Amino acid sequence: MIQHAWHFGFWFEFSDYGGHIECRGRVAKPMPIHPIAQITYRVLKLNPQARADRVWNTIRQDVRGNEFNRQFDVDALVESITQDSVTWFGRGDNENTMSYDSFRKNVLVDVRRKIRELE
Image (cartoon, rainbow, N blue to C red; front, side, top):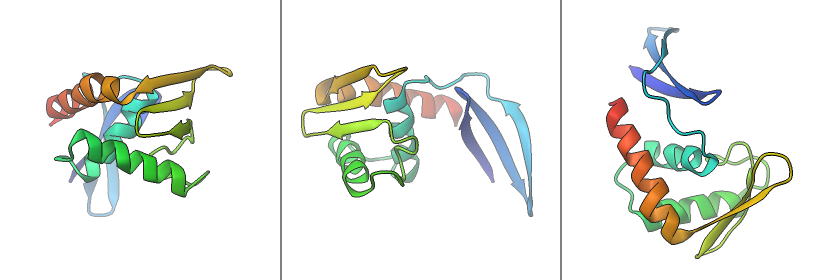
C-alpha cells in the first residue's frame, strides 16, 4: 500500500511491503506548509468527500475535545475555532486568524487539488 507523509514541509511517498517500509523519496509537488492546510489534509484523508462545513466542524471538535493530544491539529497550533473563524499561532508569538469563508473558498479547494495531484 502506498501512503504519503508530511515531513519538514514536503510530502514523501512510502510503500509498505509486508512489514518493512520503503521510502521512495520526496514527491515532486510539495503540499503548502500552511498549518490549516495540513490539518485539513489530515481530515480529508479520513473523509475525502466531506463538505467544507463537515471538515470545519471536525477540526472544531478536535480542538475542543483535546487540548494537547489532538488527532488532526497534531502540533496544537489552533488556539480557538468558532463557527466563523479560526485563530492559530504562527511563527514566534504571531496570532493568525482566518474566516470560515476564506477556509472554504481557498484552503479547502487548494488541499483537495493537491490531493488529486498526488493520486
